[in-house]
Structure formats: C-alpha cells, structure tokens
Image (cartoon, rainbow, N blue to C red; front, top):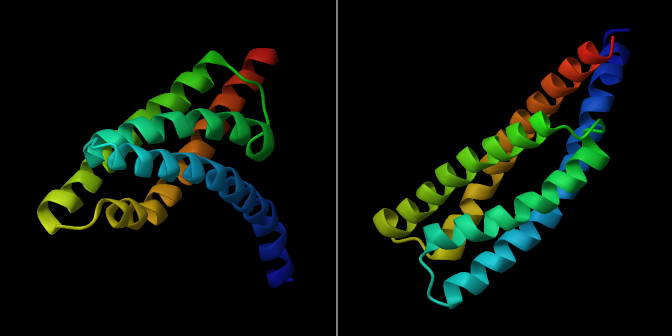
Length: 142
C-alpha cells in the first residue's frame, strides 16, 4: 500500500519533470547553439550567455505553459516567469564568466557544467510560479 501510494503521488510529478526536460532540451539547443556562435564571434562568455539564454527562455515559456504546466496565460504569470529567468540567467551568466576567468575553464565547458544545477533550480521555480499563479487565477474565478 505504501509503495502504490508513493508511485501514485510521484507519477504526476515524474511526468511533469520529463515534460519539463523535453521543453528544456529545446531551450538548451537554442541556448547552447547561440552561445557557441556568439563566443565564436568574439562575444565574452557572460554576455553571450545573457543573449542566448534570453532567447531560449521565450521558447521554454511557450512550451512549458502549454505542455508542462497547463493553465491560463496571465500577465502576472508571464512577469513572474520572466522575472525568475532574469535572475537565473544573470546568476548563471556570472557563474559561467567566473568559471572562465577564475578557473580557466573553456567557455563551452563552463556553460555545460552549469546546466544540471540550472535545470533543477528552474524546474522548482517554474513549477512554484505556475502553481501560485493558477491558485490566484482560480480564486479570482470563484
């Protein structure tokens, strides 16, 4: 009984996590591809990350809200989503540049090292943001 209760509760979360991973893969392709092209063009790693990650967030928002966290598109949700990603992108851009400057990591390696932590933090943050937005929206309906 305990195992089936656990799997019934974890099933939806696991499906959501896998869907978020699939939308993130699209974002990572856009992000890392743009990052590599910008670095090859001579843009510093931190700035290149700001630019490439910013573009990828647009794709991730559209896919995440539709496939992973279905609900209404609201101005508040959009602002919270982009607000979070602005903080996340700035933090990881700084960390990537620090890795390049202080640890002498190659730009792409610094970027790739940041991805697992970035994915985890972003999943938790986006899941929380959309849960709060959806609760607020439902309260406004009733």
